[in-house]
Image (tube, rainbow, N blue to C red; front, side, top):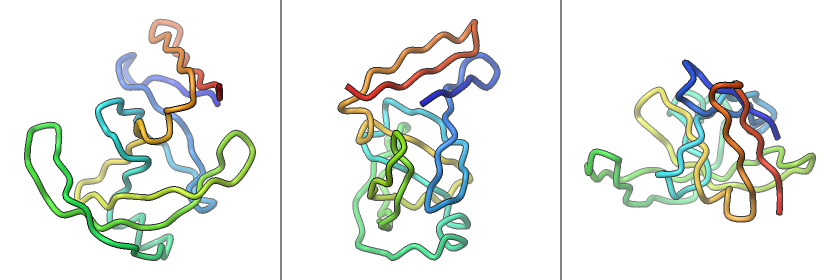
Length: 116
């Protein structure tokens, strides 16, 4: 999978979530799989599967609704747990990077993700 940088500092990937192309920020501080805003979750009509306490980067705690979704993962569908975010932000987290190698080259506007 290949991605790019926004303003040479924000690593992003285009990921198909339930067939919707989403430009997600790769966030190594996010331990989950995918985080999407409420509006996208409603648009995709995802099935809610529970709640989880979530700690934000600025140490605020809130209850996040969890949804079951699917992404295209190296050419095949893969089930993912999606956290609902009240803000307009889409994240791709470490929960998906466990068996991957990621190469980041901001100056060359290049992000590569390989399955290992």
